[in-house]
Image (cartoon, rainbow, N blue to C red; front, side, top):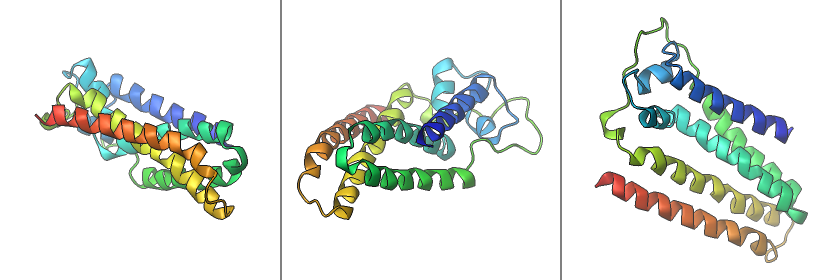
Length: 183
């Protein structure tokens, strides 16, 4: 079931990229964040320019990182995957409410374009790095919750600590990139 979930989330994100690059302005999210005159990299960054695309990107990274728990979860795998799946369910519920695939009442000939504050080269890399960091944070969280369920208060740290380091590195890198963007 997890493989099906991961593939479907990947297909949803790929489809959203397709909608942006094919300039499908019948989709509200595409209409609100892109326009035909936008350069390639701004269309790329428009995919995560709003909440809907950001949550889908975050869910995609979560779906990928679930395989780390499946492959390296050891004795914590089943409970950690249950916790991790609840985190993913949270994002699915949000995406049901804030769907990036909602239609406009009538298709528009062109979009509104990316917010001028987001038209910056750092927008291409800063948000994905930040959301990679947020997604990796769910791995040690899942291990910690699994350890609590199993009443194991020490050995889970060996499995979780490398992902805490990766999370800290990604979030620090994202903040540094955001600082360049801000100035």
